[in-house]
Length: 68
Figure 1 (cartoon, rainbow, N blue to C red):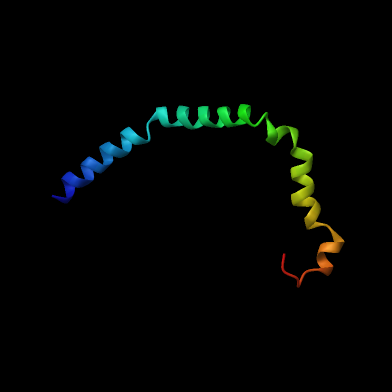
Figure 2 (figure 1 turned 90 degrees about the vertical axis):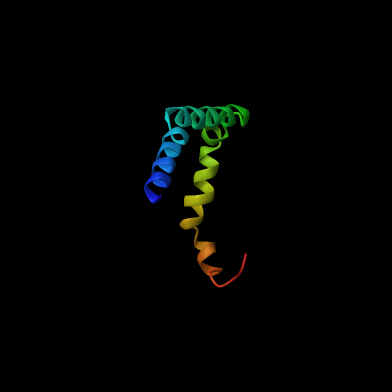
């Protein structure tokens, strides 16, 4: 009984996670990249300033005990 359930789940997994899934995920990523007008490349300096810039910001260290 358990073996038949495991066999069914294995075959379902093979159908679900086939090579077409990779193509689907890549096409969705390409669609959103084009749709957002390549935001993650164009605004990369802003993204770095907001992440790494705040890490080394001295004003942030003074407000360490405040809630945002």
